[in-house]
Amino acid sequence: MLDNSNFPNTFFFKNKLLSLNAVESHNVYGERLMNFSQKQYREWNVMRSKLGAGIKKGIENFGIKRDSLILYLGAASGTTVSHVSDILDKGFVFAVEFSAQPFSKLLNESKIRNNIVPILSDANKIENYKEIVPMVDIVFQDISQKNQVFIFIENMKRYLKKEGYGYLSLKCKSIDVTRKNKEILDESEEILKDNGFTVIKSISLAPFEKDHYLTIVQFNDSPNKIDVNIQQRSREFDNSQRRFSSNNDNRDSGHFNNNNNNNDKLNNNFRREKKDNVEYRSKNNNSEYSSRNNNRNNNRNNNRNSSSENSNNRNDFNKYSSNNRNQERKTNSNSERKSYNNNDRKNKNNKSNDNSNFESFKKSQSNNRR
Image (cartoon, rainbow, N blue to C red; front, side):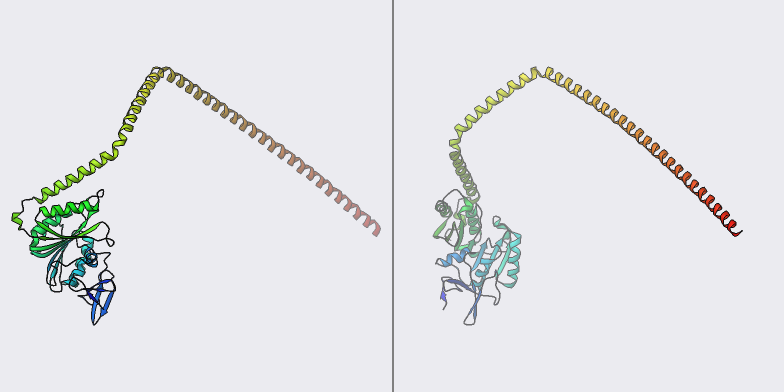
C-alpha cells in the first residue's frame, strides 16, 4: 500500500506524501494522521514545505540519512522541521529562526521532539550559534532575503563537513522582482561555483511554490583555499542590482524627458506673468486700498446709524405700547367700578321696595283683624 520515496522514513500513499510519525497521536500544524500496519504516519503538506515539494517532484536524495546532522536555516514555526525530525530518528536538526513569534511554536515542539535543537538567532551572524551547532552533514536554507545566496555560502563554509551537501530554497522574487527567474538562477549558480561549490541539480518547485527553485550543491574545497570575500561579493551583488534597477528606471522614464522640459518652460512663463501682475498690483495698491478702506468705514458708520435709529424706534414703540396698555387698564377698571356701583344702587332700591311692601301687608292684616 505504501510506496517508498528517495528519503528515509517518507512514503507515498495515493499520491500523498507521508512521514513516519516519531511522536504517536501528535500532529504539528493540523495535518492528518494515518495508521498502517500498527504504525502511524503524518501527511506532509507540500504546499507549505519546500523540501516536501522537492520530494514530491522526485528529487534525488543527496546525503540525508537517518543519523545525519542537519542545520536548518529559516525554520519558522517548525512545519518542515517536524517532518525532518521524523526522518532523523537517530540524528539531530539544528533549527535557526530569527522571528520570536514563530520561534515560540518551534520551542514548544522541541519539548515534544527531542531531536530538534531550536536556536533564536539571525542567520547573517553565523558566529552567534557557533557554541551550539557542530560540523553538520547537511545545510538546508529557506530564507527570503536579497542576500540569501551569500547567507547560504557563509553558513556552508563555517558549519558544513567536507564533501557535505547543501539544499538552497532559492526565492527569486526576493532577490529582484524585475528580472526573470532563470536569470537569477543562473547568476546564483555562478556565485556558488565561484566559491568552490559544485551545483549538482536545480529544479523548479512549481506548481507547489511559485518563483522558487531547489538547488543542491556539494562543497568540495576546504575553506582556506577560497580567496573570494563573501561580504565584499555580497556588496558587489547589491550594487549591481541597484545599477540594474536604476538603468531600468531611466529607460522607463526616458520618453517623459521632452514633456518635462515643456512643462518647465510653461512653469517659467507662468511665473513671469505672475510677477508682472504682482508689480502692476503693487503700483495701484495704495489708491485701491485707501478707497476700499473709505468705503468700508462709510458702510460701517451707516450701519451704526441705522442700528441706532432702529433702536430708538423700538424704544418709542415700546413706550407707546406700554402707555396704551396702561390707559386700557384704567378705563377697564373705571367701567367695572361704575357697573358695580349701579348694581349696588339697584339692589338697595329693590330692598327698600320689599320692606315697604312688607309693612303695608302687615298693616292690612291688622286692619282685617279688627
